[in-house]
Length: 435
View 1 (cartoon, rainbow, N blue to C red):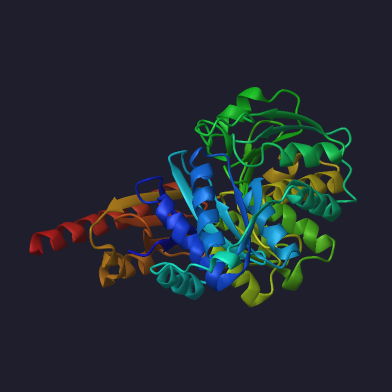
View 2 (view 1 turned 90 degrees about the vertical axis):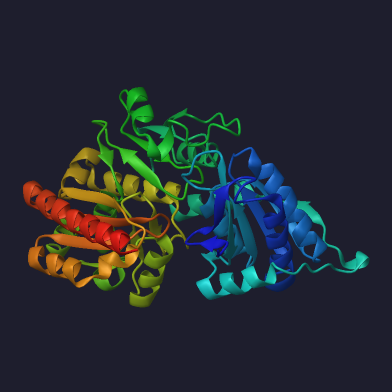
């Protein structure tokens, strides 16, 4: 099996992801990618072990390691861009504490698939420098300041005086950076889940559990909810209603068009982006293009068509004129700019972007290629309408076929989804019977 998935190397620590893998990755990066390696981590207890292994691997190959400490993934991306360097992020993003991950970032961007494949091959052999060429470790104490100063410069014209904001840091990497920047911009900030102990990251808090923040909201203008590495955010408006990534993109696209920042009048979503967002944008002369699910595919499509904003419903939004990757803090600040500029509460901005009903059914099947069978394609063609999207695809990580249907008529999309799912189940059983 390949080590690298759609978002680096990820798995349960000491089962799928070990110190040996980290050592080998550090060694290969230090030998073949760059002799300067910046390393950052989120707040998981296993981060220290993996950091030590990466450092040993990289320095043994002759590279100098800059240890950045606890930082969000987008912070490391920005630092590697500003420093024209390579970084390794230790994080499993929104996954539970027992998981961790290793993501290589070069000059702000994730490595292309072919480079990761080559790097994985290089990891099979270790490369040791001569004793007088072994690398050293530098505690890069400027990392926090370099990132926060960069973000503050991007939003130098934003005054948040009078705003009261709740931040749920998810006991993750942004427990200091996000509150710091918001306060610098003049906001009154209350923070919850900002006491990481190594084992409470993403546990009943943050962007994956909005109720934690909902219960703490009083007279706040909004709440900002991060995942473990803060490359995404979900918002709660002043009425405590969730504002997901599709609505965030709708709000942002309008402001960017008004400011002349919306290149080619184009937004990039995924095949799962809400149909309501597409209708909303089309009415305002903005195109929504769809990429495969996954932020790397969104970024590829953005670069291909020259778009500056793209993202997913999960709150992973990329503003390419501000950053090279999804950044939960920048996403929140873009929405705050829209609120200040319009002089409207978040609920009013959010509710203007329609959110059509969606249904996702996961069907267990050993042979995921069943989704390509003529019987399934015929059903999709039969029920497809101009106002309704139907996506049938195999899961990238599990033995499942996913049936996704969305449109304005909830009863219609539900009937369609269950009929297609039923047909997949039937074909799957027939296949198993043959075997």
